Amino acid sequence: MTGDKNINKIEFAKNKDAVDPLAQYRNEFYIGDKIYLDGNSLGLLSKRAEQSLMKVFHSWKEYGIDGWMKGDYPWFDLSQQLGKQLAPLVGAYESEVIVTGSTTVNIHQLISTFYKPTTSRNKILADDATFPSDIYALKSQIQLKSYHPKDALIQVKSKDGILYEDEIIEHMTDDISLIFLPSVLYRSGQILDIERLTQEAHKRGIQIGFDLCHSIGAVPHDLHKWDVDFAVWCNYKHINGGPGAVAGLYVNQKYFGKTPGIAGWFSSRKEIQFDMNHNLEAAVDAGAYEIGTPHVLSMAPLIGALEIFNEVGINNIRKKSLELTNYFIELIELELSQYKFKIVSPIEEEKRGAHILLEHEQSASICKALKSHGIIPDFRAPNFIRLGPVALYNSFYDIWKTVNVLKKIMEEEQYKNFDNTREIIA
Ligand SMILES: *Cc1c(COP(=O)(O)O)cnc(C)c1O
Image 1 (spheres, rainbow, N blue to C red):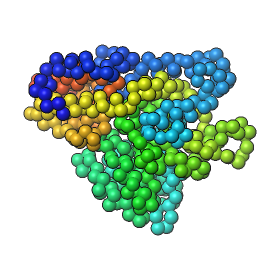
Image 2 (tube, protein in one colour; image 1 turned 60 degrees about the vertical axis):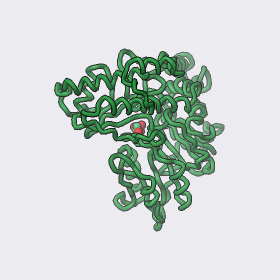
Image 3 (cartoon, protein in one colour; image 1 turned 135 degrees about the vertical axis):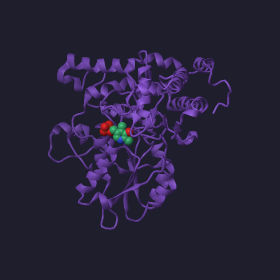
Image 4 (cartoon, rainbow, N blue to C red; image 1 turned 180 degrees about the vertical axis):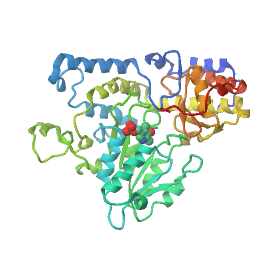
């Protein structure tokens, strides 16, 4: 926290922006005239992502089928090439990362690969605060192995949006076969201690995987060093890969050679894929977890998007991101104290991802009022406002303005002009 008495002055924000080493990147994005605080749901388009998309599009126009091997970015090994660009963001060897599928498909892929229940060890340990799709996938994988989720899925309970590592560890009992947890909780923004949880799981002979959807591109990871077994993530939130961008996965190299749970012809060793043999020889690296033909046009923006991350460096992104959320929290505490907002996110910065969550009875109508002022938050049922400032394109002024608009909305009771119900997409 700054401890500075002037943080509520516009000059404070402007001065912070003037010395922000990442400020120049804002111009690389299509921001428009809005204050966009929803980059943790869908990141904005950058000019570099637009250019790489157009180049790949052009190679279709120009080369037809030969685009698989020709053009600026041949499609055949694009999944591998993008895996290499993502490897530094997750702290893995290049061969451990592949761009493929969607988060949910990749969960199915890796759970079906790693979940090998036995009579004595057949449960999956998860939590009750994660994104629903993760739980749906776990339940269907349990059913596919002829177990019942009621018995075989253990969900550690959160309290006020927070999970306690000690409690998760207490649940790592002899009957647990596999653990799957988020890195950052999509609501409260809490970061789990991946290294500690992995160590404790391994002490008990349990394999552990993580969903990095809310940390990738915002928080550094060291998956290989932490010895994490596997991980998945989407590339359309902080990575800015575009709506429906192809997702990513990591598998620790100690499992190279393992048979993928869900196979397809793109799981093959690349050199022999076109032999069209009916006996699959799976790739020895993370490529084994590809399934079918990659969605090339949904990967193309990632080429430009990831270039920016590797230029800026994830540690610099994390540094600014924490400054933004610290400033947000401090301003909210200072300016909005009488309006009954509760900050659900952890105040300690090492426990906080890149967004903050506010609880308020009137959250849905407050979000609509914010949107009427050109500020884009994210409503989460039943009564939460999620605010995700992005280091690459949000400014300190954006935060200052948002809190001041919020103050006005509360002071003048502007939220009463909107009904307190959610839209279909929220
Ligand atoms: C965003 C998100 C998803 C979305 O999965 P898709 O397959 O991309 O729709 C899943 N899990 C978590 C934790 C997420 O944050």
